[in-house]
Image 1 (tube, rainbow, N blue to C red):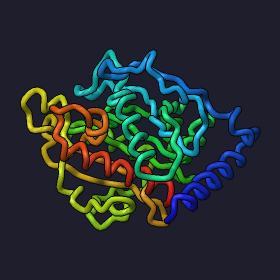
Image 2: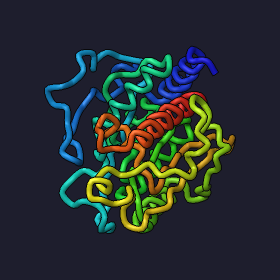
Image 3: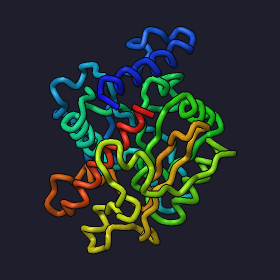
Image 4: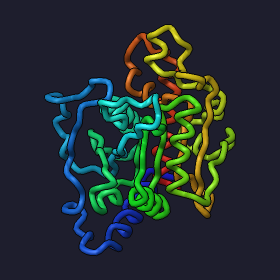
Length: 281
């Protein structure tokens, strides 16, 4: 699919969706303004925003905000887990999309809150980090379900360990009680849409903290990587899950010589594939 068709699809789908909501046809007034938070790892870009960060573009990389679960001992108490790899990882992905596709991407990401009325429906791609830490109310789960069934896309990444999986999957079951979480094979279209990456299924994108501590790139018992998904009734991936992987670390640390170059290259390429799949399916 050409980039021009891709752009037409994403705008027609999301403008139509927006105009089904009362009083929401004036898209520029309905969307929340850009906002920025301190990253989970103490990283931010205050004073270093791109000069064109307020310029509207065809696509914005969204990041899902959520309330943190206190039942998972692996979740930080005094931090926002959703900001893991944010904002540096988001902006590295944006640079890759600008470089390798013809899609015009806003130079800064967008934190998106389920508490902000209908705002979520204006951001077709959402990334959620440390998904094992999320805690969804019934209202939040219902809104996220509606968003996904209307054509939205959620990429869940940067979480390891069986306890985190239990917490994440419990939240996803709130969103889709009757839909199965499926283990993917290397034959899925998402692994070929821009770059051919059938090897992703068996490769772990490592966690930087683990590497710096002399570990193997995983946390807890999360040694074996898994790619999983939830599909809609037409066979489209609505939720893509990189479990026991840290794809966003490969974006955030791509220029750091301490991070494996091969993993950085692979992570950035699958990031491009994921976003382009979300816009064309």
